[in-house]
View 1 (tube, rainbow, N blue to C red):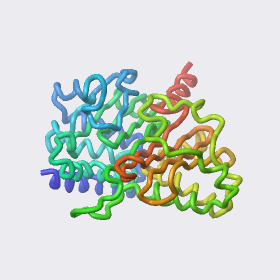
View 2 (cartoon, rainbow, N blue to C red):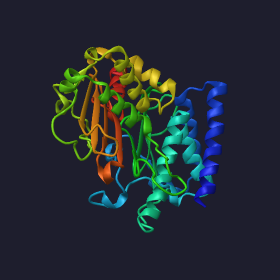
View 3 (cartoon, one colour):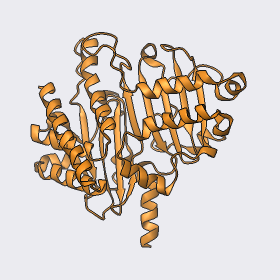
View 4 (cartoon, one colour):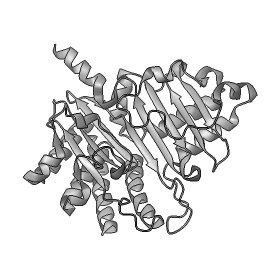
Length: 349
């Protein structure tokens, strides 16, 4: 059943991607169309689960853990994929694809399939299910409205906001994998977030003794990303910046650092990234810092982060014998579209 559903989802995404390439559509328009088509397929009861006001508290209540560990309710809000019919599932995936690049959509769906691997590894554990993902829509999708949506479940949280039909926010953007690298079975060797880990380790290993003194943090790697599931990535927590500044890296190392950032941001459509970058530069060389903690050897616990004046990228791989990855892109001032909503209100008032 799930295999058939996944193949159909890929079919929908392929045609959505072709539409992007052929017509060069505005992602805001694509998302409005995808969201409204999805909404029109829902029953009255389903709409009460899927639709929320723009300022609903659920908007910033994001999680990357399995439902049963969410306190106090033990479950997420939103409309569960498992409770959708086949048509609605495909339309939910069309909404997800409307914001993602081809690589981003591939990674998101593969993260979901890892739940099936965990299901087998954990003796049919019922909390491991590729259909335990939820869709939430905040506000009324429209060409000039302020609205957003979330596609979320274990190890995946895609949070999209659109203001005035032209301003975008995609953070928090969380991708996790367990196992980070499959060691057996039909998917042996599968490593969804390989670039995020391999490139950062290569950069850390390329540092000379003086660079390492600045970049490598003392002590063990933290047990998880420091921001965890906090609603706000507090700038003060990461100030003053730790790690090595961009200008103390050689040219090859600087390019490697940019490429690591690309592995986080290129999960989204280029039109969306161009708009964000036009308002505040995602990669500002003079403000970039790279910090590493833990072992430099594959298979041993490690953590790193990259921060600029506006953005934070965090990666942690310490759980499950260093085979369990958490990776997130945060915006100090703009998670959940706080900055674009403020800009919109300033324009109108």
